[in-house]
Length: 57
Image (cartoon, rainbow, N blue to C red; front, top):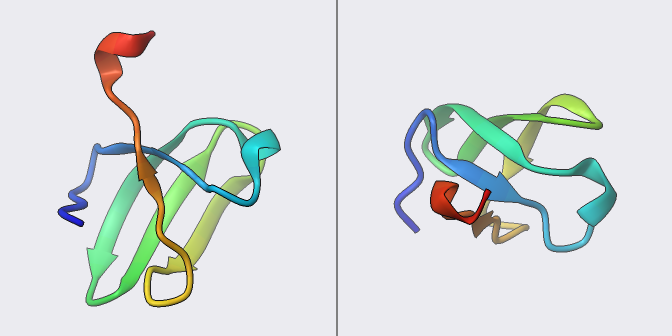
């Protein structure tokens, strides 16, 4: 998956976290600022984040 800062994502197992905006990507580690959970570090080797199309809003 091609995640870049600014990409919008959701966590497949935590829909209550809401939409998240990617802050940084370092290797498989992605920092995401989620609407309802704040800033979290996600290991994309463990979780596949779902890209959100900004036009869906």
